[in-house]
Length: 454
Image (cartoon, rainbow, N blue to C red; front, side, top):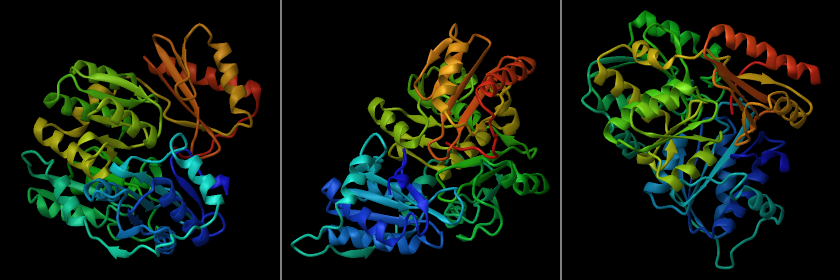
């Protein structure tokens, strides 16, 4: 069982790792952990999600708490429901971008404050082992709640002076699908080019992971064919999105952090912006040019949300395509990020590619995934090899020199380490990429699998 409790959430293969019996135990323990009286539960479109959500809810009611069933929703909508509805906590049944045979649970306290491996999940795991407990006063109630229109109206409220824009959106057969048309109905100036809007847990067209270039190729072609101003691709539970510029080129996720930060700092001078430590140096340079305070952060939504609350951070962005907003309860929100990019393109009156170009200053390797048997030995060897650099261990190992830097860290979702390296010039980047990989290969043979993530 311990294998399904991760750094940010709970996830495993259905039904052998995470099935109905386990979901009921987790729901029951969740209520006892929080001392909760009211819980809201949502789910994505995966074929197993309704059954898991039902079992989780049964565990909640057996513990004596009431359950509001939000039905099929996105993770951002579920987060909105938690803090807007004043619930004691909430659960989203989803495995995000992972394959269809996987499922999981994202759990949060009051205010959509997430449980994590640092805060709550280890104790929850212990309580799950104790089994299901029933309240002496009888079970709680189970009722339905629909907050889709309220949520979309909230997001639409962030649209500033809408201009005519054509936007291609690939919902990836995921939970952005029900939200996108309703948003565009509220913004008549926008023209929607829809792709795979209907939720389908079989993922018949492609898996819903905008970080994987293979999943956005069709969208890239559609943007060009339709003459769209930009394209947006969502993951399965719609808390992440990636962007395609008007030329059909992918936009690096960390550069979107810099773009949105500059825009928000125009109205909030001096505010604090978090960026994950894999981000380009161009991001913090943009934040500081705009008069903001840039703060490096560990990777992962639970860590970022906690830091945002501690420091009243206005906005945060991750290389994985998660973008977080204070005005949405310090939560990540793909739909609002689409709105932000549309606002920026409209306000600046220039193509997205031109707006991104000043931020695209430093050549980068992108995220390289390495399957190694002894990550700690790799980190120690690299720290010794580059002992004269600025070294920090905020998340894995970051090695910094004036003209180049790299970060290598363990994935929280896959059995790999992830390497990101950036340099002032293309030739230096390539030289140092080969050099660092060479140091690692001196320790052991590595396999470089495809894909990327957290």
